[in-house]
Image 1 (spheres, rainbow, N blue to C red):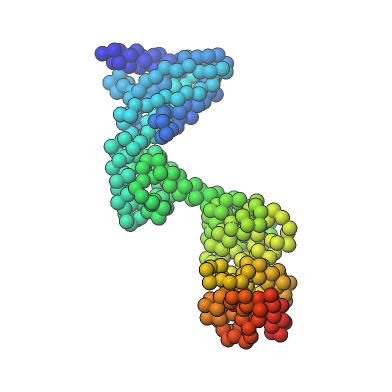
Image 2 (tube, rainbow, N blue to C red):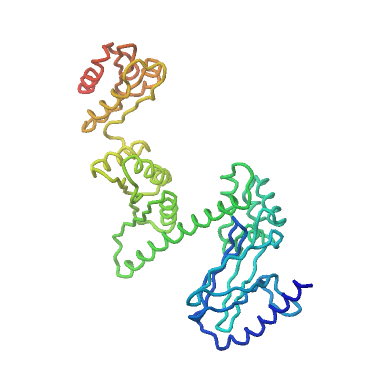
Length: 401
């Protein structure tokens, strides 16, 4: 009975303050979100006043009006901070029904409203959606399910904002599944899908907007470059713009870091694009000697079969069969061949098992033994030499090619 009386009293306060809204400051605003970690409604914003002020917070089912016959789902009294600032966390009961809600603030200084989607692992509706996701095998069928009956909202997303990307979300939910999803992990995957789609769209549209401006002045000598320090963003935006125009694309991951970091990021983003036929020029951005950028870029293109001139070095990892200092030998060969003008494939192998057999396509190569090694050409052994002479003998044979 006490809870009901409090609810009626707050509802009445809401009605009274609503009438005062005619004189409210238009600068009042409210942002509402749901924190899945602790099940709290997080409110932030500002009322059009410089004074501390009591506020009535109303949660109502989205699309419904609060009346005496249709009371709010939750009514709460809070106070603004200094200068009318709203900064409040309202812990919701575990039994609070999931779904989309309108959140209203009513006060003598103004009104504001926002929306919030409440969901959790403990909500029956969310449990049902998670069960469907965890059992899904076909992303098309899963996408249709997520589009129906407000099921995206049961995962914390406004269905009107996700409608165009539901298939992508469904595809990634199946692709990235590693054990059963809970509400948090499913939401994280959907957020990634939406971010991927938005980046792909916004980066490409920004580039095309500028291209269209140039076209208005009959200037069509255009090369487009869309770069990001994030591998996935770089891939998504360039893939999208390639679908929208035929202008040449300059590819690169910007601010990619030191040589190792840059080589990894550039190979992932640029390699994926180039294998799809996207991209006309590339830069491997390195924090270091700019000359190394050229070396890495050429190596990337050669690894994709897009550049066939120069030296291609093949070397195996070390293993228990290796009896020579393979690492030092491979590094020395790579360094000696860095400025070699020949188009040649060179193999540096740790043993004869990996040597002439696995590396038979190499133009010239070396394979280690126990304190010695062999030089081979196109899989055929041509000489056996002591370990300390392997480098000099290999270079001598390369000079003969």
